[in-house]
Image (spheres, rainbow, N blue to C red):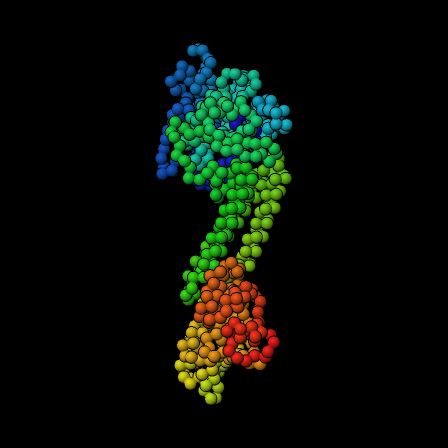
Length: 544
């Protein structure tokens, strides 16, 4: 009888567990509580749990000299719930395994599991497990016979349940109910640890064991493929007969977020990858939300998304590290192929994160920082008024302060009637504002050379719009460093509405503008510009 055939699920390492990870940090003493100083529990031992709650060990651990039975019972032992002994014989007990028991424990397990090897075509994993480590790090109880061990159970405490890792009964001792009695020991230990749930896993082909567990009150909760072939069955039992409330998360999600656990590698890779992707979406997506928020860029627009992005990336990298840890665990259990694939996925994931940072997060944060600092890189707009006072030239890029500068210049020169435009574009917000300034004042606009991107928005504000012989207008969709077309849907929808309803341009023309990538330029012919209502006169016929 056994809980599992070792299907690649590594026992939890209590020595590496952090507070609240495998067992509560101050509950580590429970190993000593059952084992005691020098290997046995002393009288009056107690558990310390959260909030310094103490619960004395009463039922399983019988201190020396306790006369509830006819014979004194050795410290650190558990009297089995049902024994076939006479009134004058010593009671059958299970004691905590000691370091010196590891060789005999290994022999016991190998003899108990040998009958399953032909069924599954290989030695079950418990036959090759490290029992020196199991005795040292887990709760292992053994039933002795003269010169040998008759039975053993290996238990692993977790934060909210006790895992029955292994139950083994020697062939010569089978038929005496030792396996069932050791499962009762597991329940008694779980209660003394303050846990109300037992879990175990076994090979799906071990039908008689599954039937026994179901008879003992265990229910199947999940089935999963074994990397080496076959299927593992997960089972659990609620103690005290209480009806368990439905879990908030499905069983497949109930794995620790911050540490590795004995969970099948396929589930680890799938769910930790999902968690990593979600963390990146939240972290990097917060930057895109800040870019699209509108209004002046403040330090909060940069700091808050920056912190969220750092946390998201850190969490995602930690999930990749835990996938690598699970891969090492599976590799150590003898399945290097699947662990190699998992290692490859962690490398691919790390490269993906680096690509997201380089291609999206860093450019977006850098651009917002430039805007916050005054947008010096784009603030090179030159404003020149002609000698007659009726013509104003706007030449250069539009920074965040461009609209305010143009307003002051127009207020200072009220006789200006024509705005001559030239430049590569710039910020769309100031371009929309300058468009409205030109329209409200009834000014005309003209392009003698090149006017691209946001410059064309200003041009469309003119009451009469003309193009010089060498003039050229260049259009494309809205863009922002590090943001894809999908990220800029709202901004481009706004531009399309502007072109159709404010500038009164042809719908097909507006659609072609939106369809032109932000890193390309579409320069219509003068005939196309006139047909769409962009210009009223001018331009060299047929010239692009």
